[in-house]
Length: 292
Image 1 (cartoon, rainbow, N blue to C red):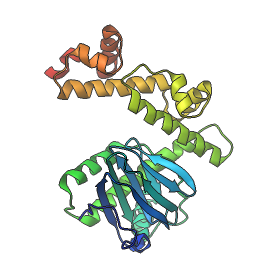
Image 2: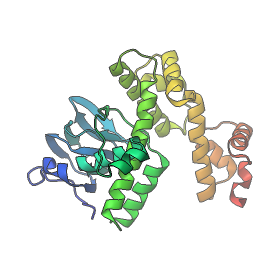
Image 3: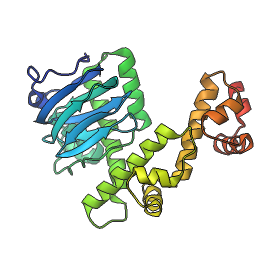
């Protein structure tokens, strides 16, 4: 069962959720506040508009472009201003489930055979940074939203936790590889790169220069380019182009727009440039996309 309403602070004890798994998928368009509290292991996401939080004394805004995964015992306050409709997803995990899934991911099969009840110990703390979605998580969330219930609760939570921990580990590896000595500096740089990425997703359909993106991320332009490429393997310009091409393919497959209209709607000024880039990226010209 999926809870469809935001929890009432007076009647919902988040601390009691430490020993059970719970999904809250709620829509709201009114102001909402849940006071400071210690969290269980918590997957936290927002759609339609961004949600505002105070996480471990730091203000964060969570949009549809990334999620947070909180440690058991992190401190969180929720504040929605109610100016725009928001869709919020909280998935709370018991410590036992996270420990057990972590053991399956990180321990060897031999160790698990020797001790089937083995749990993972000494796990690193999850940093308070935004994480990119992966296809597995996106698919599971879409299915959960569409169905609104579980065929098997145990299987859903274990499967989701496995994809979640795997993606978090992958993203933490990116953050830890950034060129900075202090861990806190690497995490802050990664956080700012994610702000830049979200800005590109929200503004891909207009003329957008790297300097404007870097300003949004509060970084020097050349520093932003260096850090962005280190974290993503692509320059900001290459990443923005990929966003536009993926959006173009979606429009061509699902809409009735002409190739020219699609090209203009995603920010390309030259139809020829769009066609060449599309063919390079997908292996076929955009005019043939609907024929496949």
